[in-house]
Image: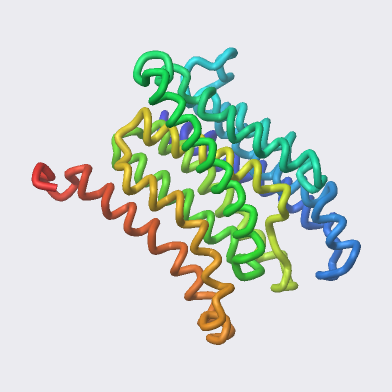
Length: 301
């Protein structure tokens, strides 16, 4: 009975809520692609509703799993709900030339300190803490750009939801193999949301040239992935190499802009691009499987 309840509140209900908002967003978006009105709506209400489909859907799943988050947050997982809210707020004005980049820099600097408060206080010394803080802030800033660029670099149509479904699903599996089932459930919420958007895109979107995720969705996607990855690495037993491979996977979406890949044309080019993003995720899962001892003693690894 408990398992059914967790599946409903942690997977099915978020997918239903997020999917409903996603359908509304698609209905408000202009039918004609690459028009001035379409570009405007991508940065307007219709575009923000795509971010809301992911952010609100995740919040629903979080409340189903964790109930109301503590305030002020005491654990890294408590911040995940607030990161979704921050992503929604930032996504609303992300298209504005000045405020978007400023918010990106400020949030990239603040997040490590918020999520790793206990680590800064009890594990790292002053110098070590500053080094970690600077490095993590730079990594978050770069990942944010990579996620945003991947939305336009990935093939149009349902490719972007499918790729991020695989990335979030792979994250959930790695967390489960690393002994953190609770964090894995949070990754599962994201996977359910991307799966819903993928299925709905295949069902509703007739214009295959449309981009599914606007720029305003990048704060929600980035902050949630970063929050889950940081919790997994610092507070669970996710292998460092698996974390690194997950982090670099959005970078490989740029493979589609290589001339040789573009010359493949059609489904071959699309398949090569999706495979490039999927490869580090698959390797990361394999490493987590080996480290987990799933196939026996891993003491020699």
